[in-house]
Amino acid sequence: MPRRTSSAGGKQQRPSRALGRSRDVKSQLYAIEADGGEGDLDFGAAGSLHVSSLGKVFFPDAGITKGGLMRYYTHVWPVLEAHVRDRPLILKRFPNGVGGPLFFQQNAGEHVPAGVRAESVGAKSRLIGGDLPTLLYTVQLGAIEVHPWLSRVTDVDHADRCVIDLDPGDDVDFAEVVRLTKAVVQLADNCRLPVAIKTSGARGMHVVIPLPARTSYDISATLATLMARVIAGRHRESATVERSIRARPNGTIYVDAMQNARGKSAASVYSVRPRPLASVSTPVLPRELTARLRIEAYTVGTVPARVVQMGDVWGEALAHRPSMSAVERAIKALEHVLDGAPAVAKAPRASRRITAGGAAGVGASRQRRSRRRS
Image (cartoon, rainbow, N blue to C red):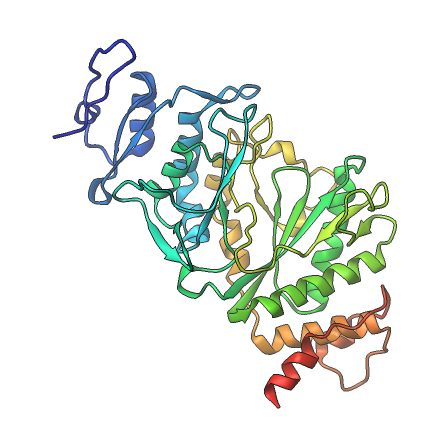
């Protein structure tokens, strides 16, 4: 029999069957929220999910409820699914919305509903992305953001993407973040590496480099760190790799390469962020990196229409993966830059396209790889 729920006064609400067996989850969410905010979502063969408090306001300034957040994720699910599929999820829970307390949850919890995907990753049972019931379950728990690992559960020791996070100080205009993003994109292009670009949804930008299969986190971190150091060396007035907030120069943007490690995560594309206007981490095209780009333009209210108009911009950008030899050539070229060594005539193509400059220092990754191969 369908599960029945009760209101505070003890009056029995209509069972989920009365909402219809429709596969249209958005319609079910509207109906449940209008009928007291508690009920069961029917996913057909994927089972059902009990949801509650859908009328709770999660974003007071934007007037978005918990049910509204679930409807947003349901709407963008066709383009979000591939980017969280098979990835362990880290939850940042806001049970009372953006104005309330926050806490992190790494494990899946003791009582995971049937139909919600959880698997053992190391010593912990973790929620694994890839189906809509699991994603909406995280929202039911109070998660606003989607934070997947940079690797999949089938191969957690290898990364399939490399992230550079441009995190501006409070006194930095967003137009400066956009200019620095263009510099990172140009550097990647000079290295013959494809990139995907998105707003962070908070105050910065994310540049992501797709990686070939079985790329170690050591290589991913080396690539990101070298790129960050080159950018900071070339743009000393606006960029820094100083991790300490207090030690960073005023008016600078932290070029963060430190998320490229096993078990770390970054806000997913199309993830809502816990900001007053419910802004969304949104993919952008290189031609959109102009002074007119605004983070606040991409919200729960506007992104669904953009997805309908533009499709999966993120997936298209990540579809072109470099070879491992291309990644290694890029690392060598970046090390030449940091060495201040001129590129020689017979150097790999990526090396010849990067001019010397930037901070001093030599990466050790290639030395380690050479020892492993010898």
